[in-house]
View 1 (cartoon, rainbow, N blue to C red):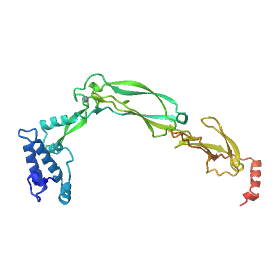
View 2 (cartoon, protein in one colour; view 1 turned 180 degrees about the vertical axis):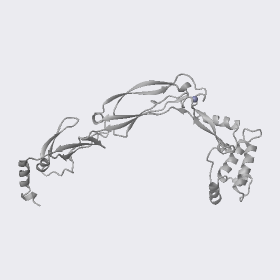
View 3 (cartoon, protein in one colour; view 1 turned 120 degrees about the vertical axis):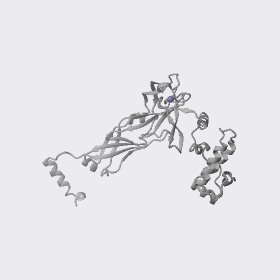
Length: 319
Ligand SMILES: [Zn+2]
């Protein structure tokens, strides 16, 4: 393993300041953009400084001696001191292999329970950015520009989104068109799920398009909702029906379902219609769970009051 202290020509007990000074001197001397520069040597120097120039990494290096390899770009450390043409040219060269990618577009789509149950067809319109065939002159179609930040001593060049084209690389930000998208909702799709159309997002100059994401929200009603694969239905019955039991008809996507409420039903428990819920998309179906809600009469007549009071004297209702 390389001896980083030797590389920088400093002793093991030198201060951070000494190390910094030594690195600065050597990096100027061997900078590859300079006459007589040495790229390999420069990299080695940067690697050494990246480790022992940092107090924490230096401690680790001293104790373990196994700070392997080289993390980070040697030109990043260099840019703390310099801001010259060589640096700028080099960064541009490095960035070219990175392909630009257009912005992803996100559409929130609210669908009904029926639409997810059946997997219905949908059509929606959306707007996306496309090429106007001309390159943004400010960023030369790259979508980003270099900007200098920092103080006089520690200046750095950073990439920022081009303000002239908002990052797409087209002159004046390109054209915007309206697209119509037709698709079938996958059966059983749930809130928070999304569908993706690769390349459906904004286009970009000299790069690939972003994606279009359709984020689903399944909207139920006061008495019906989707809970995972289960279809929850809330049915109002009067309290006497809960005691005596009753035959109910409840609506379902495929037609009404008859369900028998047994005598003395505990209304905190669901009645289950097996397999009548939503699909998981792979052939499995959840259940329909019917909850009874006691629907109190709004008032009582004298006769009703009298009869109900009599019940309270009977064997199973006595206190
Ligand atoms: Zn631009």
